[in-house]
Length: 203
Image 1 (cartoon, rainbow, N blue to C red):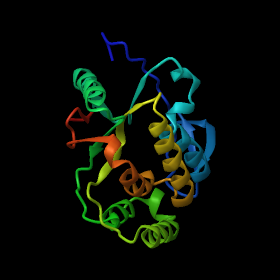
Image 2: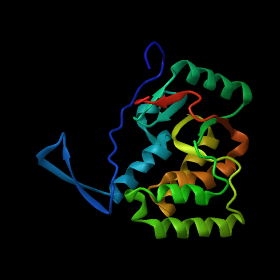
Image 3: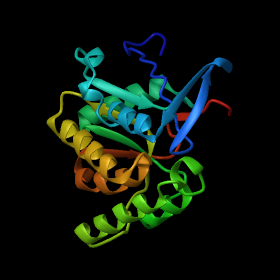
Image 4: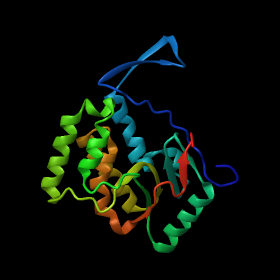
Protein backbone atom coordinates (compact mmCIF):
# COMPACT_ATOMS: atom_id res chain seq x y z
CA UNK A 1 0.00 0.00 0.00
CA UNK A 2 2.25 2.70 -1.29
CA UNK A 3 1.85 6.35 -0.29
CA UNK A 4 -0.26 5.44 2.74
CA UNK A 5 0.40 4.89 6.44
CA UNK A 6 -0.67 1.25 6.19
CA UNK A 7 1.93 -1.34 7.18
CA UNK A 8 1.92 -4.43 4.97
CA UNK A 9 2.47 -7.78 6.71
CA UNK A 10 2.85 -10.78 4.41
CA UNK A 11 1.79 -14.08 5.93
CA UNK A 12 2.73 -17.17 3.92
CA UNK A 13 0.11 -19.60 5.21
CA UNK A 14 -0.08 -23.12 3.73
CA UNK A 15 -3.41 -24.58 2.66
CA UNK A 16 -3.82 -28.30 3.06
CA UNK A 17 -5.78 -30.30 0.47
CA UNK A 18 -6.19 -33.35 2.69
CA UNK A 19 -5.70 -34.67 6.18
CA UNK A 20 -1.97 -34.76 5.43
CA UNK A 21 -0.03 -33.66 2.36
CA UNK A 22 3.65 -33.54 1.35
CA UNK A 23 4.71 -30.28 -0.30
CA UNK A 24 8.01 -28.85 -1.46
CA UNK A 25 9.52 -25.42 -0.96
CA UNK A 26 9.99 -23.68 -4.30
CA UNK A 27 9.29 -27.02 -6.01
CA UNK A 28 12.56 -28.46 -4.72
CA UNK A 29 12.14 -32.22 -4.02
CA UNK A 30 14.86 -32.06 -1.38
CA UNK A 31 12.73 -29.78 0.80
CA UNK A 32 9.65 -31.98 1.20
CA UNK A 33 7.74 -31.10 4.34
CA UNK A 34 4.34 -32.17 5.59
CA UNK A 35 1.42 -29.85 6.10
CA UNK A 36 -1.94 -30.97 7.40
CA UNK A 37 -5.24 -29.57 8.53
CA UNK A 38 -3.82 -29.02 12.02
CA UNK A 39 -1.29 -26.57 10.53
CA UNK A 40 -4.09 -24.77 8.74
CA UNK A 41 -6.17 -24.64 11.91
CA UNK A 42 -3.31 -23.10 13.86
CA UNK A 43 -2.95 -20.41 11.21
CA UNK A 44 -6.65 -19.57 11.41
CA UNK A 45 -5.94 -17.79 14.69
CA UNK A 46 -3.91 -15.22 12.76
CA UNK A 47 -6.77 -14.70 10.32
CA UNK A 48 -9.49 -14.45 12.95
CA UNK A 49 -7.51 -12.80 15.78
CA UNK A 50 -5.09 -10.25 14.29
CA UNK A 51 -5.41 -8.23 17.50
CA UNK A 52 -3.03 -10.75 19.09
CA UNK A 53 -0.19 -9.89 16.68
CA UNK A 54 2.46 -7.74 18.36
CA UNK A 55 3.33 -6.27 14.94
CA UNK A 56 0.03 -4.41 15.08
CA UNK A 57 0.19 -3.03 18.62
CA UNK A 58 0.71 0.54 17.41
CA UNK A 59 -1.95 0.45 14.71
CA UNK A 60 -5.61 1.41 14.95
CA UNK A 61 -6.96 -0.70 12.10
CA UNK A 62 -6.14 -3.91 10.30
CA UNK A 63 -7.18 -4.56 6.71
CA UNK A 64 -7.02 -8.31 6.17
CA UNK A 65 -7.05 -9.65 2.63
CA UNK A 66 -5.95 -12.87 0.98
CA UNK A 67 -2.87 -12.79 -1.25
CA UNK A 68 -5.09 -13.55 -4.24
CA UNK A 69 -6.60 -10.06 -3.96
CA UNK A 70 -5.57 -6.59 -5.06
CA UNK A 71 -6.96 -3.89 -2.77
CA UNK A 72 -7.79 -0.31 -3.71
CA UNK A 73 -6.03 1.69 -0.99
CA UNK A 74 -8.07 4.86 -1.47
CA UNK A 75 -11.31 2.94 -1.06
CA UNK A 76 -9.97 1.27 2.06
CA UNK A 77 -9.14 4.69 3.53
CA UNK A 78 -12.67 5.88 2.77
CA UNK A 79 -14.11 2.81 4.47
CA UNK A 80 -12.05 3.56 7.57
CA UNK A 81 -13.50 7.09 7.52
CA UNK A 82 -16.98 5.55 7.28
CA UNK A 83 -16.29 3.36 10.30
CA UNK A 84 -15.39 6.45 12.31
CA UNK A 85 -18.33 8.52 11.09
CA UNK A 86 -20.91 5.75 11.53
CA UNK A 87 -19.47 4.48 14.82
CA UNK A 88 -18.90 1.00 13.42
CA UNK A 89 -15.85 -1.19 13.92
CA UNK A 90 -15.91 -3.90 11.21
CA UNK A 91 -16.15 -3.91 7.42
CA UNK A 92 -17.07 -7.19 5.72
CA UNK A 93 -17.42 -7.90 2.02
CA UNK A 94 -20.45 -9.67 0.62
CA UNK A 95 -19.89 -13.04 -1.02
CA UNK A 96 -20.35 -13.39 -4.76
CA UNK A 97 -23.07 -15.94 -4.01
CA UNK A 98 -25.79 -14.59 -1.74
CA UNK A 99 -27.02 -17.96 -0.51
CA UNK A 100 -30.21 -17.77 1.46
CA UNK A 101 -28.99 -20.28 4.04
CA UNK A 102 -25.66 -21.46 5.43
CA UNK A 103 -26.11 -24.72 3.54
CA UNK A 104 -25.22 -22.84 0.36
CA UNK A 105 -21.77 -22.11 1.78
CA UNK A 106 -21.45 -25.72 2.90
CA UNK A 107 -22.39 -27.13 -0.51
CA UNK A 108 -20.01 -24.77 -2.31
CA UNK A 109 -17.14 -25.60 0.05
CA UNK A 110 -17.59 -29.34 -0.34
CA UNK A 111 -16.51 -29.02 -3.98
CA UNK A 112 -12.94 -28.59 -2.69
CA UNK A 113 -11.01 -31.63 -1.38
CA UNK A 114 -9.33 -29.72 1.45
CA UNK A 115 -12.78 -29.11 2.91
CA UNK A 116 -14.71 -32.19 1.83
CA UNK A 117 -12.42 -34.46 3.88
CA UNK A 118 -14.11 -32.98 6.97
CA UNK A 119 -17.64 -32.72 5.59
CA UNK A 120 -19.18 -34.63 8.50
CA UNK A 121 -17.58 -32.25 10.98
CA UNK A 122 -18.91 -29.21 9.13
CA UNK A 123 -22.36 -30.72 8.91
CA UNK A 124 -22.46 -31.49 12.63
CA UNK A 125 -21.31 -27.95 13.42
CA UNK A 126 -24.01 -26.40 11.24
CA UNK A 127 -26.69 -28.60 12.76
CA UNK A 128 -25.53 -27.68 16.27
CA UNK A 129 -25.63 -23.96 15.44
CA UNK A 130 -29.09 -24.26 13.92
CA UNK A 131 -30.20 -25.94 17.14
CA UNK A 132 -28.73 -23.03 19.12
CA UNK A 133 -30.06 -20.20 16.96
CA UNK A 134 -33.23 -21.77 15.61
CA UNK A 135 -32.49 -20.90 11.97
CA UNK A 136 -30.15 -21.51 9.03
CA UNK A 137 -31.25 -18.33 7.21
CA UNK A 138 -28.56 -15.81 6.23
CA UNK A 139 -29.57 -12.12 6.06
CA UNK A 140 -26.21 -11.48 4.34
CA UNK A 141 -23.63 -13.97 3.13
CA UNK A 142 -20.10 -12.67 3.69
CA UNK A 143 -16.73 -13.84 2.40
CA UNK A 144 -13.79 -14.14 4.78
CA UNK A 145 -11.03 -13.07 2.40
CA UNK A 146 -11.36 -9.33 3.07
CA UNK A 147 -12.14 -7.32 6.18
CA UNK A 148 -11.28 -4.12 8.01
CA UNK A 149 -11.34 -4.20 11.80
CA UNK A 150 -10.69 -1.56 14.45
CA UNK A 151 -8.06 -3.16 16.66
CA UNK A 152 -8.69 -1.02 19.73
CA UNK A 153 -12.37 -1.97 19.89
CA UNK A 154 -13.50 -4.42 22.57
CA UNK A 155 -16.30 -5.41 20.21
CA UNK A 156 -13.73 -6.42 17.59
CA UNK A 157 -11.78 -8.44 20.16
CA UNK A 158 -14.98 -10.24 21.10
CA UNK A 159 -15.90 -10.80 17.44
CA UNK A 160 -12.42 -12.13 16.65
CA UNK A 161 -12.30 -14.51 19.58
CA UNK A 162 -15.84 -15.74 19.03
CA UNK A 163 -15.00 -16.43 15.38
CA UNK A 164 -11.86 -18.33 16.34
CA UNK A 165 -13.75 -20.37 18.95
CA UNK A 166 -16.27 -21.29 16.27
CA UNK A 167 -13.50 -22.15 13.79
CA UNK A 168 -12.14 -24.61 16.36
CA UNK A 169 -15.56 -26.23 16.53
CA UNK A 170 -16.34 -26.07 12.84
CA UNK A 171 -13.08 -26.64 10.95
CA UNK A 172 -10.72 -24.79 8.62
CA UNK A 173 -13.48 -23.64 6.24
CA UNK A 174 -13.90 -20.47 8.27
CA UNK A 175 -16.56 -18.92 6.05
CA UNK A 176 -19.06 -21.44 7.43
CA UNK A 177 -18.50 -20.29 11.01
CA UNK A 178 -18.33 -16.64 9.92
CA UNK A 179 -21.93 -16.85 8.69
CA UNK A 180 -23.13 -17.59 12.21
CA UNK A 181 -20.78 -15.28 14.12
CA UNK A 182 -21.39 -12.10 12.11
CA UNK A 183 -25.10 -12.20 12.95
CA UNK A 184 -24.21 -11.40 16.57
CA UNK A 185 -22.50 -8.15 15.49
CA UNK A 186 -24.84 -6.72 12.88
CA UNK A 187 -24.94 -3.28 14.49
CA UNK A 188 -21.13 -3.03 14.41
CA UNK A 189 -20.60 -4.06 10.78
CA UNK A 190 -20.56 -2.06 7.56
CA UNK A 191 -21.39 -4.47 4.72
CA UNK A 192 -19.85 -3.69 1.34
CA UNK A 193 -20.65 -5.13 -2.05
CA UNK A 194 -18.64 -7.94 -3.57
CA UNK A 195 -15.43 -6.46 -5.08
CA UNK A 196 -16.39 -2.96 -3.97
CA UNK A 197 -12.80 -2.18 -2.99
CA UNK A 198 -10.83 -5.18 -4.23
CA UNK A 199 -10.44 -7.50 -7.19
CA UNK A 200 -8.59 -10.73 -7.92
CA UNK A 201 -4.98 -10.40 -9.06
CA UNK A 202 -5.66 -12.35 -12.25
CA UNK A 203 -8.33 -9.89 -13.39
